Length: 81
Image 1: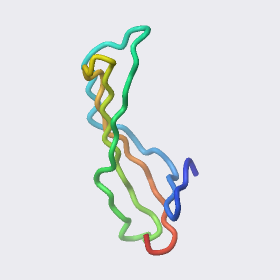
Image 2: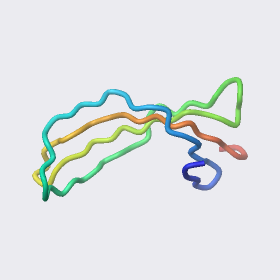
Image 3: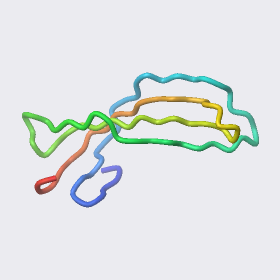
């Protein structure tokens, strides 16, 4: 298990998709990450498991985008989440 919160645990990262490297990162840059959950799906064959994606956008101190990517996780559920 990587991380747990309440009745949901992240079991493993399963991959990155749609990686876009937009600008270089230089020494001294201050990076800000904006991330949100997307594409939440519960497994049909194993109801205690599911998959979720996180879309991430990283920008430097000038609000210039440096990288955007999607990351997918395998989740475990307890109870009626």
